[in-house]
Length: 409
Ligand code: LMR
Image (tube, rainbow, N blue to C red; front, side, top):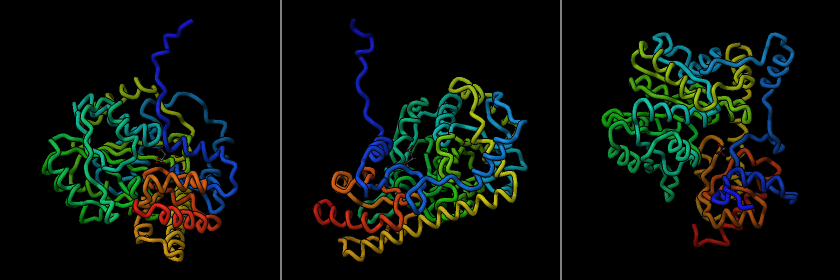
């Protein structure tokens, strides 16, 4: 019998997850996964943060915890603590009642809820994303009702630095009420953030043109190892008087990837508007997934609300950020040792999980096929996939790919 589903065409795979699957299925002994943005320890293994393990044991043993529904906007302890981590606990907007959070399904969920809210209630239609960006930004915003996706220049592949003039020019031509997606820190995929002076100029243009900042904060703590430093851009915009939203993810900095723990922070000028905004976000969430899961949010809330655990978490973050920095240095040193053509300083100048290596698509595909080193075709690598046992192998393979396809450089 014919099927009504025969109209369905095969969709394209999601590159980052397909690479992880290929890596898992690959039996080659020296295989390396530099694709998905997830932390790996010095043995190449996923790392459950010790503070998370500790909290999970405590939660499992707590007979008062039930599996009742959470409120639609999530666990209040969690959303309050999240906003305070993002903005700093002494930020005046907290006391002024001008900020609140909505528990969401990780950073992606925060982006989706925020975008749908802006589209439905503020009637915004245009969004700008950095080129390049995390590819999901575009899908999330268009699915949420935005109809006019626009790229702003972000990257100069020749200098391997931010194309700041291009960015400013594009923002200057953005129409009023455009939503501008800004990576709060550790830009994915380039690993290059604006300097404080550049943030100031970005804010000037956005204020002048009445553009709306939508921050994506997926790596707080990973850029510098310091939560406060990594909160700089969002805090600066708040200080300048912007109203904004920010999607926070705890996937990376708490290692809670599959628990989908995130927060959507709102900062608004008039605290009297908070109840109405909350009531409408409630309906956005209700129509999407009704209410959020509890486990990950309980872990995060317990850690953020207890000074000793909070300090332990900060140490765990430092451990991860320090290892990433060491691996950047190690990769650069190996490439230099091999005399690999090109300048490799950008690897240590970039921050966060990723390096936008400058490897071309052809070179990247060669690394996958020939060396079983999995990376995005854009040349983005997850630095955490490197460790003392494989960094020389990866450098040797990169050196080979670059020498084999020099015309691509
Ligand atoms: C990444 O960029 O690798 C991660 O954020 C995973 C994802 O969902 O793409």
